[in-house]
Image (tube, rainbow over all chains, first blue to last red; front, side):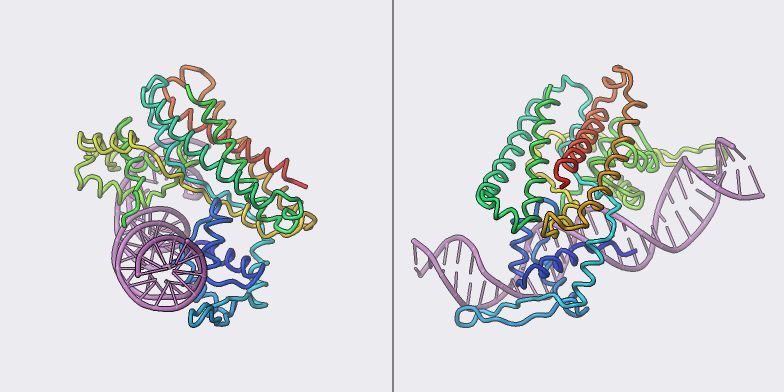
Length: 177
Length: 177
DNA sequence: GTCTGCATGTAAGACGTTACATGATTCT
DNA sequence: AGAATCATGTAACGTCTTACATGCAGAC
C-alpha cells in the first residue's frame, strides 16, 4: 500500500541543513528543487505537523517585528536517522516523468501534418525561455567557484536542469521536420 | 479546481486510432507511452465507464473462445471533437518531472562524499539497462522505414525516450567525480 | 495607504497506486 | 495440470492541486 512519501525526506533534509519555517521550505521548493519535485504550502504545513508528532522535528516560535509569529522547525536525532536511512538507500526506481507535448505528438500520424510546425515552435519557445531563466540563475548564484563548493547539491541540481533543457531543445531542433 | 484529466484524452486518442478493449489500452500504456504517461487498469476501466456516460465512446460486447466477454470501445463523433480540441490546443505548461536520485544528490554536501561513487554506479547501471531495452525495442519495431511511416507518433515517442536516456547517461558520466 | 511579500493554516476534490477479487484462455 | 496471460472490475488509501481564509510587515 502506502506510497513513498518522499516529501517528508525532502523536508527533513532541508531542516538538516539548517532550521527553517514552513514558508522557508515553500521557497526552497519554488526556487531550488522545483525542477525535480514540487510541493505547495498546503502540503508542507500538514506534513510538518505530522513529522513533529512523530518526533522527527521540533519547533520554536519566533516573533518577527511586533507580533508576527513564525514556527522555526529543527530536525531531531530521530529525524536525522530517518533521513539518513533514505538518502543512503538504493534508488532503484526511475520515477517516470510526464510530458503532455510528446503525447500530443504521439497522435500525429504523418510527418506532413500541418500542425507540426506550430507545435514545435511553441515548445521551442517555452523551453528556450526556461533555459534562459536557469542560465541567469546559475550566473547569479554560482559565478564564483567558492559558491559551488558551499552549495554543491544545489549546484548539481541546477546543472542537471540546465542540461535537461539543452537536450530537450536540441531534440526539438533535430526532430522538427 | 479540477485538474486536467489528461488520461481521458489519451484514451480517446487511442480509440481514435482503432477500437480497443480496456485491456488493450492497458497494454499500450505499458508498452508504448509508459515512458511519458502511466495508467493502471484500475484507472482505465472507471474512466472508460465515465467516457461512455458522457457519450464520447461506445462499446460492443465480444465473445472470445466460448464465453470470455470483452468490451470493445469505439470513439464517437462527440469524442473526436473533444479529442481534437485537446490535441490542437497550446501546450503551455511544462509538466515538471520528478527524480528521486537527483534529490538525494542535492543533499550531498561535498564532492568527496564517499557515497557518491556507489550512487552514480547504481544509476548508471539502471539507466544503461533502460536504454538497452529501448534500443532493442526500436530494433524490433522500427528496423524498416515503412514501419516508421505507419506509426510515426510511436516512433517519435520511442526516439524521445532513447534520446532522454542517452542524455541522462551522458550527464551521469560527466558529473561523476 | 496600498501593494507586495511574509506567514500559517484548512477544505474539497482530483489524481494515482496498491491491493482485493474473480474468472476464462492459451501455452507448456 | 499448472503457469502465464487475457479480461474486468471495486475498495482503500495516499498524494497533489486549487481554493478558501486570515493576518502582519516592509517598501513606495
